[in-house]
Length: 160
Image (cartoon, rainbow, N blue to C red):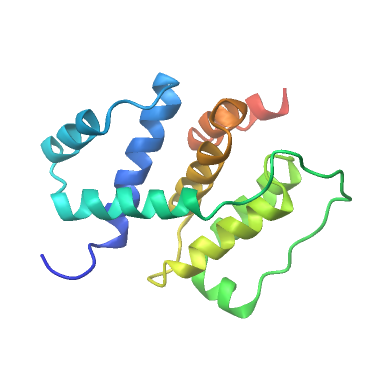
């Protein structure tokens, strides 16, 4: 395989790694993850692309640990963002922003990453994976419960 690996397979790898972290409350060694991914049928190019994408995602920074108290805002998506992100994906972002899981800067970071993928429309599953990765790379322990809830579509636990 030459060129870029398919987006869906790279995002599937990212999702598997995020689930590892969420379930085990720690990051297993990269060699353990790579062995399991290879055994699951992913090739080394796809695995490398996923790790590189996650590394660049976490190195781009984001919000500071000292968030300011701000008045909640409503995000209006641009035409480009509407084309890049499915209606369900945009609705998901709006919902978790309204619940206070995301701040404005985190939401903007996720939207920017989604648009940068520059492939087919970002689905709800893709958006959940991007959001989980964003929250886990910023402060793993703080958002572990919330990530677990929205990955499982268990919204009632977030309200209680």
